[in-house]
Image (tube, rainbow, N blue to C red; front, side, top):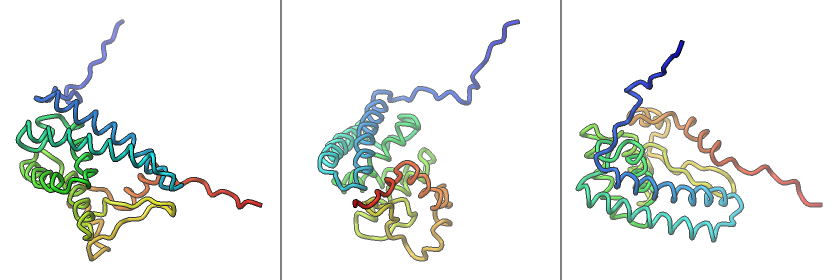
Length: 198
């Protein structure tokens, strides 16, 4: 007897209306993430010069792709336009566009509108809002931004009351801060301590 397996239709993602824009965002975000991961791991050793240059170049290229996408679409590249994966990529690019605060501000405004219309997760907006706050020298509301250096992983300052951080995170669909930190440490584990030289 022959059996045929069927993929549930709810697991199939329809092709986005703007596939070329989606591909450009996904490719740009993937290149930037590759360089960023190398840079983050290098923070433990502080041997970052080459990695930092490559990461900055990739971030600039990704930001250019995001700017083009926003200009072509006339709004935030949300899941209804480019699909959920490319929409996540757009948020990642915006978060990493510290060198272009004007682009970040535009992205934050457009992303807020998308969350209000239900076409983007509020968690995406929260991450970008935190990044913009940190860039402006202010505490972050949702605790999504960390500093990784030679001494380890550090949560950047959060809005008071700090003991309500997890409640604020839950409001925007983020997991508890301890879970997020554990995931980061798993992705970027600190190197094992070296024995002292004799």
